[in-house]
Image 1: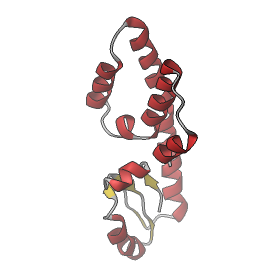
Image 2 (image 1 turned 90 degrees about the horizontal axis):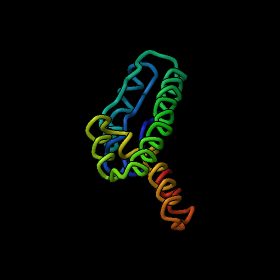
Image 3 (image 1 turned 90 degrees about the vertical axis):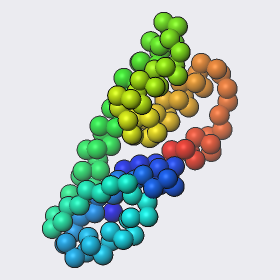
Image 4 (image 1 turned 45 degrees about the horizontal axis):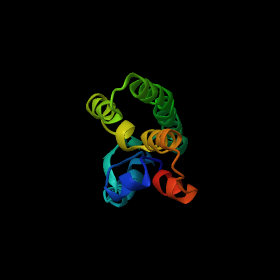
Length: 130
């Protein structure tokens, strides 16, 4: 069953699960998903590949926001606006995955790594992402 979210989101029970199969099979899987999900998108009586297709399309939406977020942070840095203020704006206007998900983690880890020149171990980055 494809899911949207990071490991940290799973620990907090904030994943979005996408089960697809015959209704009886989806109903059997849902109790297991309830432990880690905030919501689900049931694709009852759809082919298994429908859930994976939705996952791929959704991930392209999420990943395509990395560039605008990065550009916003660069602009905020260059104009003297504190990045925390931009983050508050993003939290209010685009809540959810853009503030806690993979794109924001990548942005914060790599953006601040470049600005502060602090070495962040690759295993720490992988722990946030995977």
